[in-house]
Image (cartoon, rainbow, N blue to C red):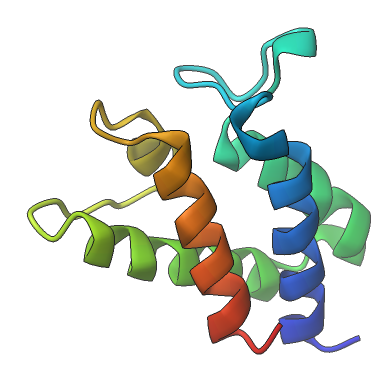
Length: 108
């Protein structure tokens, strides 16, 4: 699989893991059965779909998500996924929208 294909598969699976907001949390990567943040979900899927945890795939995912997160909140300049996830105004709808836009942007 290409880096884009791995990234798309990982983004789609991360979106499913966050389960329409039911398993999305703020303030921690993981919270047991409660769920995880966007970075935690992506960390899990990158380990599954990205053999050897190749840095280019991780960077592609991060850069793509932050591109759309920064468009969504133009007065902010997010530098990390946890920064976007935990920003006080971020709601699950924002997380889901950014994941959808990232999948589309990468060709999924």
